[in-house]
Amino acid sequence: MSSIIWVLIPLVAIVGAYIIDYQKNKLKWQAKNSEKDHELGELRSEIQRLQKRVENLEAIATDVSPGNSYVSSYSDIEMNSTEEIRKENELSVAKKATLKNR
Figure 1 (cartoon, one colour):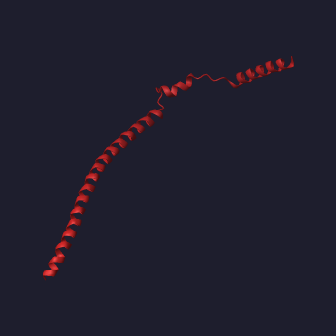
Figure 2 (spheres, rainbow, N blue to C red):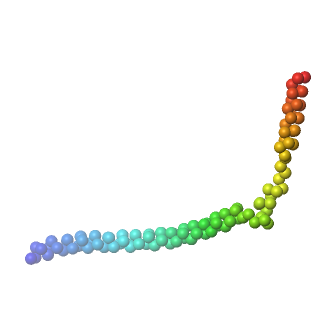
Figure 3 (cartoon, rainbow, N blue to C red):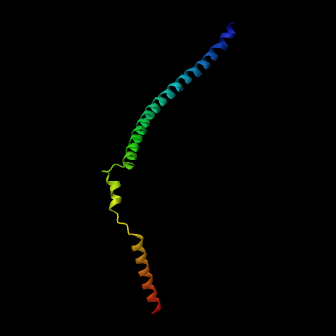
């Protein structure tokens, strides 16, 4: 029986050391996870803030109300009729033809 005790004492010490080491590592992992959880919460709130901002910008970009200056700016653009463009092209071709014939 006394020989078994001499074997059990070092065995218990070794197993105890592994258990203590495991508990220390477990506490370190929990500390890291709590830091990551905090960072994860911050990132989630940032994502929500950015999503709201994008939704707001999309609403502004797609606003088609009559008072919207973006939509009304198209009415300020002067469009030449196709007849005016055709006449301008004919004149420029005629000028080039007369310069070439000289």
